[in-house]
Image (cartoon, rainbow, N blue to C red; front, side):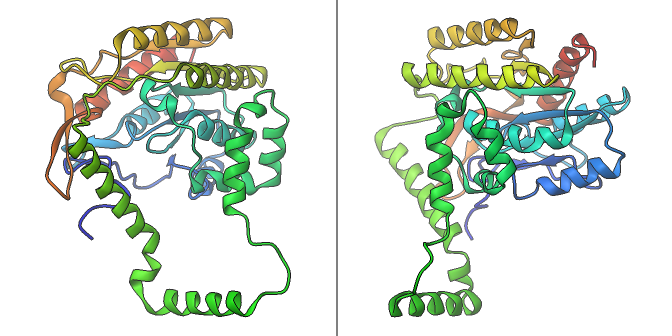
Length: 340
């Protein structure tokens, strides 16, 4: 394969942090059981959940011994008697984080939820399969349906459930039977067939890069968020924070680090309004708030060099291990202010 299919958004210089030993960093339904098992093996201590996107896992210019912010904060919180578990997905959106919250909170009964709200990801509306798998669990779906914010996510959740549903039962046609047999044969005897979903993803990534290059769309191109989508997402966030607070969970909302040395993709008037709205939402619910926008200096940010064409772009999401140390330290200070 020409590129790492699981990490195409990182570029050539950034890689995922690989945790060894006790599993405390997970993504979604595909690996949540490992983190839950590790927490229970540790005696189910007071839990802190940190949700996020690829900024939490990606380390630019990854070197031996480098640690990401969740691992650094985990060690710090452990000294104060708290057990940190992280759930992060690339480009995570609020619908997905709401599903993960409803799937994991009843098990961990967390004391604190740390939730970064990325302006660029607030427009995302889909639910990836590995998050939608949580919805297949009857208890999770029942909990979601009982929430006041269910109407805000019902369409996306039901669409993802429909996409993953098995075909209707009944008598199989000859064509269906032959197709199923052929699929099984190809899967068992041809590696490229088994990898067809990954190959489809690679083709989509290549097409995306080429389209952007031809149209002159770059990482610095301004990307405003539609006002109706923005209002809908803020209402969902309001419901999520209210739900957490009603169940005795403290919440820390923070604005994640954003590159300052280059004029980036955020329209600044909208972005400043977004930060004010987050702070006001936190105040309404008695939640903590931290603006960590400026904490990582320019030299510690990444450059995205795609592995297929070699195009170089400034990265506004990922930074070096030094940036991770800054993020962990500032989130730690914010948790201390909340008594953790």
